[in-house]
Image (cartoon, rainbow over all chains, first blue to last red; front, side):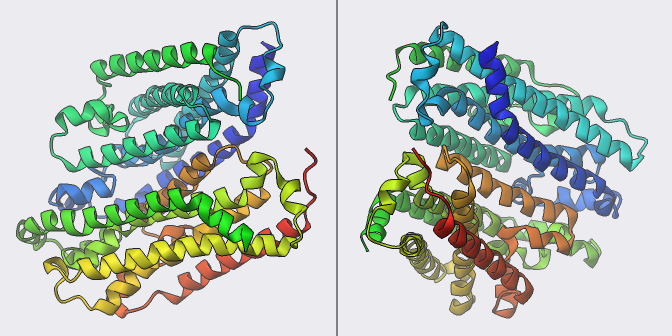
Length: 263
Length: 266
């Protein structure tokens, strides 16, 4: 419990900074929704005639940005990018913060096993990710409420936030695993960030294709595409895959953390 | 000089990887993807022909120019600049936070050189690396645009457009140095670089969505618009001035801090 409290305190400042950034982005983005909604159905038709590559690069593949839902979906893709980068940080920090600060000797003299310590650190990270998603949800619903539109999109925003949490969890576990496998702390963070970059590139590429097919399995940022969420569901198979991968990465992280040299 | 050479040497590997990625991203977009896009040109123009002209500027896209070399360049520049921004932040944070990360600031300060010299050597090292990367990048752009895709584009404008990357990187270098100097602790360079790079990317996306010119002042990836280069042959003055101001202020503040702060007791 002491470790958890300490970790929560240590993570508070970065969390607040991320939350301020996400809040500003979501708030400004949604409040200005009216600005884009001038052309009625015509703009949708125009966008539909765009080559897929262009839409993908605008982050608008597979959604109709002229509707409130589609627009929110585009905004949430950027929130997802933030969530993934934050999660990479959370996972890497849980494993390597003490070794960067050279305080491992201190914490390992405590009457707790390494597994317990790592577990508490990861739990703190997960709590912050959970808060990140809950607040993103609340900000969005509140901002959309200010628009005074009749449309009720709360259910979809909830699904978007849920997908943030799922993909974020995957990145926490992946980044913790990569950090535990790397001898040097700096390398671990680097690999985590590279993993995110690959996911971003793969996500963009699979957006450019009309049918991503097997590519979807290896592009985590696209496990829960906006088109499915707008349809009101998260793909069950991909929820299972995310959970499975998260568990596998955690397993490797823990088993490796027990044997790790302290440098 | 020793500090300068040391920093150059220790950043060499990361410099090579980043320069290669920059050029690869450029070639993928401007030769590979551009050709694919040109194939759909006729169909697209037919579809768009029926729309009123007001739409042609939707999302900051100039549809009439999109299927030209310059128009597409301006469109994908955000992505190229994203890579460039991550590179610039990662190099400058790595160089300027080295002593913070390895906790040897006191060691460096025992050397018989002033702090100002240390700062300038480090700055010069980062500038050298960025300049070298951009010379290569400009060369590749100039050579590749002589191919069929860019036929008819003025070479001078291609060079200026490619140079926009350098200026964008300078802004991010300034921000990165300021972060490295002012942050209490720098645990991982890669995390900082990713966060800053994608921060800029998201701000640019916000600008596209909002279509508000004012947002551009806070979207550093859009300070140097390649669209303007291909139209007028130069950058837009007010954003170039903003960029210069941001860079100079960051460098000045970090110089003051770097030369005047207490050396950490370790």
